[in-house]
Length: 360
Image (cartoon, one colour):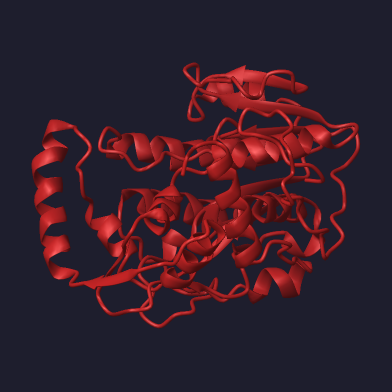
């Protein structure tokens, strides 16, 4: 992105947040190609969609649920196909004549989403899209967005792409199922594809890591246990560049790539960068983790049958206790990818965005 946009798509003052220039060449997609994006109304998908719309000569198409709010994406030169990502008719319409597809759609963790829905959104949709891709005579490549979560808890970080799959929840399990199926199907049927496994995605407009920014803005910064709580980040701008690179680079064909910054960042360092940008000092407080795991388990046991969001999740407690660190050399060595956002620059720019929009 050469210019920053607000969450609603409008241009906003840069405030020094213009991204650094790319450190690698990003070849364009084939001119005149039809490109389908799933999950285009989400945080990551919408950033990708805007980049594609800025490319000259592309016919950009997006598949969105009937209930999806397109506000903020109005005015973009996009052909919208309404339907569920696991609906064969909707996928058929979206894929008709397509040369590229970016399968970004995901079911976010929620007590209201059951196992069947996770499997439909992650596994069934992947199968439909891959099968539809083979029916397109000029199809070039499918970029399938998975997650580093397929590797589950990493006993001896950093983990690379060859680390075993060990998903820890339904989201990760169904993502792993989708990716496993795709690798086998593509090998058998000669489907052109690449897989990206993103680390923790952040950037202006993100709400999932907003909790960390809010903690850093609070009087005390609670940290559970005694570990470093390593967290591996990737700025959404860098991640979507990686999607585009994987769509066209010859060496991406048939490969899976973990996409994250060169190194993981301790949670406390993240907090200090954010607090410093807010003009305050961070005050970390170490708290034993065991009581929080017990309380989270009780909350989930009581709330899930009632289909109400638990005030505390075991997964959220684990977020503050486990190390998540990955070896991200493959995407750099094979594709020449390089992050333009450092942790410091990205976290500071995102902090300014949150503050400017009243989120902090």
